[in-house]
Structures are given as structure tokens and as C-alpha cells.
Amino acid sequence: MKPFGLQAPPRRAPARIASTADLRSLQRLMTRALVRPLTADDGLQPRWVDGRPMAEVAAEFIKPNDRLTSFDRLEIYGRMYWFRLLDAVRDDCPGLRALLGERAFDGLAQAYLATYPSRSFTLRDLCSRLERFVAEHPRLTAPRTALAREIARFEWAQTVAFDGPSRPALTLAQFGAVSPSRLRLGLQPYLTLLVLEHPLDDWVIAVKRRNALRGAASQAIAAEAGGTRRLRRPAPPRRGRIRLAVHRHQNNLFYKRLEPAAFRILCALRDGATLSRAIAAGGRGAKPELVRSWFASWQALGWFCRWQPPVAPSL
Image (tube, rainbow, N blue to C red):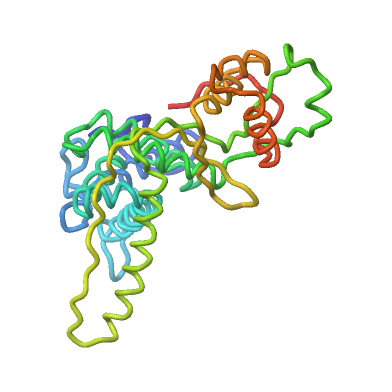
């Protein structure tokens, strides 16, 4: 799979670094060498993208030493890159791992990183395009591709909630300063509204508890000679539509289930509707006493901020 968004590497490494263009060329060569998937036994690919021996290409820009060849030294960097990124994807996707199993998940993660290599200084953004990749390559998650996409979307929302940006929360005084027919309320950037066809909030919590128990059991078994205890892989969640807000409060991650009317109101506000129109979008379920209770809770959680036009996401 061709890495998405990466420019083609130079044909040859620059003989010397005499300009920023030379440095850029070397960086592109090194980047492409690192993002290429490892072999089945976790080694560097033996051939370069143009068919030349990788040992020949590595010798153009990495010096050997008295213990390692140029190929060996580049292989160390390649392994460090891939092992670190694969560990990060595993940590961010416990639900997807539980659904697919370790072997299928590792295959998915490696194919994903080969197609969408990291383009950010932070590992936080690593799984931002995972749902998209699952949709593009359904065979890697068949026959549960729809559920896998939903889990990937939910787990990315947790990443956003955990350390996404925040804006100053609006106060009650600021609410009353503008007429409801003109007032637009923004939602915090770290808050994601989801309609899910499975109760993934409860299921992922159960998966995380099971993983914690498995870790504790592994330590206990290691202390017992001949221990064979194993925890069962969790069954996939049953269907059941829920509407969910994934957010944080006081630096802790939370999931909050929402009534259909409450969900419609929040979606309307997120999309730029005035307060009056958003409440009207709630429909018959938006009873005055319920709306007052919902808004009191949302304001206490700090969900509301000044509304800003949405920014198109980068690919």
C-alpha cells in the first residue's frame, strides 16, 4: 500500500548537505525508509522501492561502524519506529483489539500505518484516520466491518475527549445577555456527539476491566508454577441504538447517554442553530422542564462556549 500524503523519495541520497533542499531530500529518503512495513520476521525490507538492494540504498546516507553495517543501523531505526507506533495503536484501541483478536488487529494496524503513516509530532493523532481506513479496506475486518468502524469512531472520540483543546466556558450571565432568537452556543471542541448502533460505552468499559484483570492474572500465574488460567475473549456487543456524548470533566474521561430530543438539541447547537431553533429541533420530547434540567447539567459540565464556524478537517 502506498503511503498517503507522502512525497516520492529522491532517486539518490544527496552527496552532501549544502542547502535546505539537500536536507529536505535526505529527510524524504529517511522517512520513506522508515514508514515501509517490516518483513514477517520484523526486519527491514531487502529491496528498495525501485528494486535496488536495500543495503546499497542504506549505504548512501548511513555510515557503518565496526559492529554494524549501514543496513543494520537503518534496521534498528525502522524497528524502533514500527514497534513504538504499533504499541500506541494497541493502547488507543482496546475495543477494536477485543473485537478482532490480536492477530487480525495487528494485521489491521500494520496495514493502516503503511497507508496512513504518522504526519504529526504527537502520537495522539495516530488513529485519527483509522475509521476511514477500515471503510476503505473492509476485508481486514470482515465480517464485522460495520461494527469495527463504529468502535474506531468511538475510540477516536475518547482520544479527542481526553486531550482535545478547550475554550472558555460560558457563564449564566453570558447566556442572558443575548436573545434566544439570536444566541448561538458553541460546544467544546473535546466533546463528540455520536449515534451508535451498539452500546459501546458499557462494552468498552467491560473490555478495559477484563484487560486489567488479565494483567493481574498474568502476574499471579507467573508466580504459580504450571498455571494455565486464561480469561475469555469478550463477546461482541449486541445491537441497540444509543446517543452518546463523549467528553471530559475535571481531566477525567466520561460517556453520557442522551435522550433523543436532548441529542437533537445539542447537534443543532453544534451546527450553528440559534438557541430558539435548537430547542425547536428537539421536537415533542423537548418538554420545558426537561430542557431546563438538560441545560443546567450541560452548563455545569462546561460544555458551552462561544460559537465558531466549523473548520474543515484535514485529510
